[in-house]
Structure formats: C-alpha cells, structure tokens
Length: 586
Picture 1 (cartoon, helix red, strand yellow):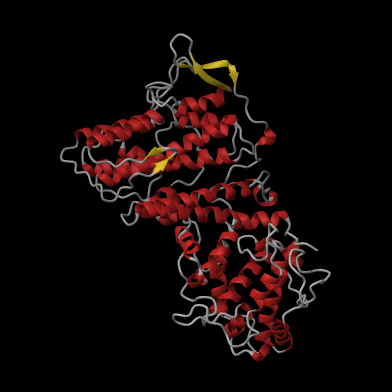
Picture 2: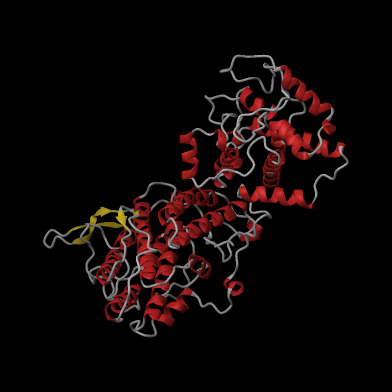
C-alpha cells in the first residue's frame, strides 16, 4: 500500500493555513544548530530564528507533544467526518510487509530495529516508566541530547528516538507526501496514524501517573501551538476590534477625507501630514476591492491582468504616499488604516449612493471601480458623453501638491523612508525635496487617481479609469488611425468572463466570518503584512520588513481562493461562497 493522502478538502484547508511552512519552521528552528549554512541562511531569509530549546534539550520533549496534539485537535474539530483518519495505530507496524503500512517499495525491506522494538514494547506496556511529560516526549522524539559545543551529542539510551526512526523508515523520496519531508508529510494519512499513536501514549502516561488529562498550563501551551499553526485559538487575542470599540471618536475614512479637505489647500505642515495620512489610507482602501474581484476569477481572463496591474500601481502609490508622509515628519499608521476601513464602506472623494463591498468580479463591480478612478474633470468626453463633476481623489492630490509648493520652510527627512524597492517594475522613490514630492504626486495622478491628462501614459499604458473601462465596455482600446490616441475599438472585443469562470462568492458581511478558521487565517496573514509595512517605515531594517510584507502578501491569494471555493453555511449566512474580509486582527 503506497502513501495515502488525506481527502482533498482537508489538504486544501491545511494549505490555506500554510501548515506545511509552519510545521517545517517548528522543526527547523529546533534543529538550528544542525542546519547546514545554506539551509540556515534560507531559514533566516524567511524570518525564522533559533528556538531557545533545541531538539533533545530539556523542555523540548513537552513542546513536541504539545505541538502535535494541537494539530490533532484542530483536525478533529474541523473535520469530524474524517476523525478515523486521525486516529493512531492500534499497534506500531513493525513488519516491513505489513498489509496496511508496508515499507515503501523504494526502500529495501528490513527487520524493525531491535532497540526501536524495545521502545515500542516499553511505551505500550509501561508508559508510567517516565518521570515527566517532557522526559516521555524527549524519549519518543529523538536520540539527540545536545550539550554546549556538542549539538550532535546523543542519549546513552539506544531505545530513544522512535519518532524519528519511524519517519525515516517510511520515507519515500518519490512520494509527493513523503513522510520524511515536514513541508508535505502532514498531508499523509500515515503521519497522523504515527502521531495519533504517540498522543495516545502520552495520555496513557498521564493516566499511569494519576495526572489529569490536562491542566490550565498545558491547555495554554496547546492553544499557543494552535496559534502558531494558524488556528486562532487562545494563545493570541485574534479578535477584530470594531471601529466603535477601538476608538469611538475616530471618524470613518470618508469623514476624515471631508475633514481635511474643508480647506482647499493645506496651509501648515500639520495639515499636510493630515492629508498624507489620509492618502496612505486611501491607497490601502482600494486594494481589497480590486484584489477580491481579481482572485474571484478562476481563469486567466484579461480582466484579471487589468486588475492585477492596477493593484500593483496602487501598492506603488501607497509606498510613495508613505514616503511623502515620512519626509515631512509623519508616520504611517497601518493599523488605523485597516481598522477604520471595514467593508462595506464609503470611499472618500466618491459621491456614491451605496457603500463599496468586497464582491466577486462582475460588470457591475467594475462600474463601481470607475467611480473610484474617476479623473479630475471626468473622463474624456468621447467615452461616456456628459458626466457629472465629482469631488475626486485627483482633486485631493492636487491640493496635496499645492501644499508642497506653498507651505513655507518644509524640511525633508529621508532617514525613515523605504528606498529602492520595486513594485510592479517601478521604484518607490525617496522624497528628498519639493521636486521629488511633486514628481511622486504627478506619477500617482498620471497612472490613476485624477488622470485627466490623457487615456494613454508616457509608458504606453492606460490610466486606471480607462483600463477598467475596457472591461465595462467589453472592448479594447487601440490607436486611432488619425490621432494615434487610444480609442475604444469595436473590432477588438473583450468578452466578459462566463459565470462558470467566477467563484460564486457572496458579498462579505461587515465583520467577516470570525468562526471560520480559513477566514481568520487570511485576516491574520493580512495583519502580518500590515505590521511588517508599519515596521518598514519605522526606520529599522526597512528593506527587510518590506520584503517580509511582500512575502506575507504572496500568501494571501491562496487563502482567498480557498475561501471563495467554500460554500457558506446557508442557515447562518445565506447562499453563495465565502470570501476574504481584510480585517485587522490584534
């Protein structure tokens, strides 16, 4: 019998919580002193660090038992229909030709090691032999007993290390769920038979010692391990703080925008900072809307590429706004930015009759995006004819630019800016003075918000309004034969995606889905990204924190798609599938 994978739904759930990465991290941080230099450098690049207790050291045996019990509890709770798959062996398969668990065909069948057979017998017949939970855990997990200067020192008891022995006995390098690889072995049913058996031996030990199944200290440790695995149980407070609870006097983003734009132009450096704080929040506010629509597309439709390119430029604009704010002595507050914006909500500078919701791709949603990207004077008339005058985001940026031109005595601080990072192939530039500030604002306006200069840009791309308008009008732009300027071309159709090519995601309700582990995992990863962005503009290792933020961001699509593929609980939420809420969890 070859390796058997867990059911797809359980594997997707694990992947959505990034269990493979968390599991590998847990073990590598505890084998840090044994890692080859390249592997250690790769771990450092991921943000991992040496664990205080290394494998085999006092205390790590209990850590080992706790971590794997936490995973078992999460699986049994999340997938009760598959509970039998997470039950341990009745007896360890010591026969290399065992009918249910034979050794892999790629290995040479061999007799079960005598010392390991003695370990199995001891654990089955005399679990009370050990003095503490930790002593039991160390005995089962590993033979390593590191000492100062001797990380490879081993226990004199040759029966120790049954766990590591079994992993290697059933390892199969040809398997996609190789029991020897922590990144993937958790998707292997045999992994859970092994660890279920170990967990049962732990319970038998506590019974033999007259100990309760768990105490408050042990439960706290298990819940903390669940938090490491993305469970959001205990250990950390992962609650979303509603705006009213976080600060009942904090206005909405739209209200802040109206407040700072009561004056047509900021007149002091303090007022300029207020404008720029709103600019950072505004740029961040558009991203969840665009990304949700993009991720809801199952296929590589041109609309997905359009949304992706615009989202990248919004990220660039956010970085530039952060540098503009930092240059004049302010500091971005990503926690406030995310907490204040809780969808559905109104966006500043947009005269809309209804709030903007996190919604799957549709022509109607793309039309809402046109409201966001409306140029200062309205779109060039040959597109939609007469349009109303909007108090636009572009007009807001014009006021910011005027502030940089007219506020006397502005000093430009470059010490806490993020320098040289590229987003979408374009650099987040350092704001060294007025000229650099005005150039950054001009780029923001030319690419998107307030671009009434032209449909096309010097780089040959379309401003955001016109890029989205292609999807709404279902045709591409092409150079006009006379003027050479882009015009909608009926001979170059852009059909909308078929309904089957879009996840049937329902609008995400305010507050998201707090009891759904995948939804919480998405929010936790989004929060991690924002925390790293906050640190990037904090002045210490900005490049490192910025890269960490990008790393967290790259994990969001997988979590979002996992949500969008899951039908909602119809009795609780109604029809349709789940979707990401982009909540800041503290």
